[in-house]
Length: 401
Image 1 (cartoon, one colour):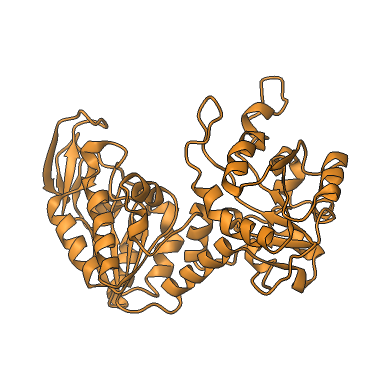
Image 2: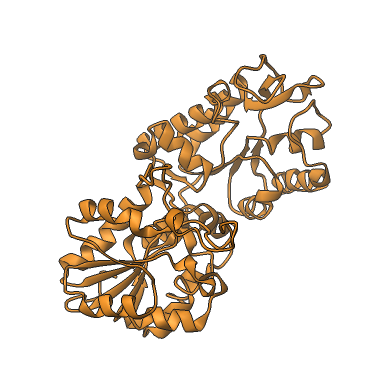
């Protein structure tokens, strides 16, 4: 993108403005909008006009009782005022992303002006990757920039198919997309060693490909969260009422065996904070993770696990974190996730490269005020997960075959 001239050009920028809003349609977290600002401002400062494409939610999956689209809930119009404040310009809005209004407003757009188009997912053609819709979008601009890493794993009309209507020198990644790809590559393809990955979350099944790929690359693998109990039961542990995927026990044993073959240090939580119900007000105690009583469940890693995890993290030079260590939404079970976040911040201060990759881990570091104390926080949950699994992302290949 830095090598392109935007002067006098209309630049289509696919962003990810899929932001949370309250019942009054006020934005409650504008992280994704702010993440796209460097790209937008670079084009404006280069005397280009910016036409923004984005989705918001899944309106076709959440129709009103009469089958119509809930436009008030899913319209991008709610973002215009805040976007105008952030860019310092009077952002224009088109009530559809294709059609006569979009064409007219795009044609009238002057250098250093911004036009936000309506939610691309109001059209079925978006998620179907419809070439006709992609062509209509492409006709609105001279250059295409994809800065929506969060949707790079989708072969949608506005994220992948559209790129084929632009010559290679008229399409590029935005600054955010570029940073996401470069930081993922720095972590997985040419890390400074030791490389340690921390993987949490509820289910092994959600992270099978990730774990398998990581075991080919890492020096140490830390497992926390609900998925840890499948591994613990697979080794003969008693886990009470803790979350377990009984159909994944053989897989868990295979992954443990692979870690041994690859000489990967494989850490499971030696102790757990357990509760007698899934509630912040439950009775709690700390026990060895393989000795959880009947009717009790593990909801966070215990103090010994926190200590051993921290020790391995602080020995690493490159660290990837994907998934919380417990039910961090409840204060009673947030200590493990907090300590991992603090360990990452400490490791970063000591010169390690730390990447927080997607989903709940990002929510955790943001809630704990530590996002600025790690090297990179990814904006793409599913996209980053698929990239770390070793998959090819359609939105990436469309720009850089």
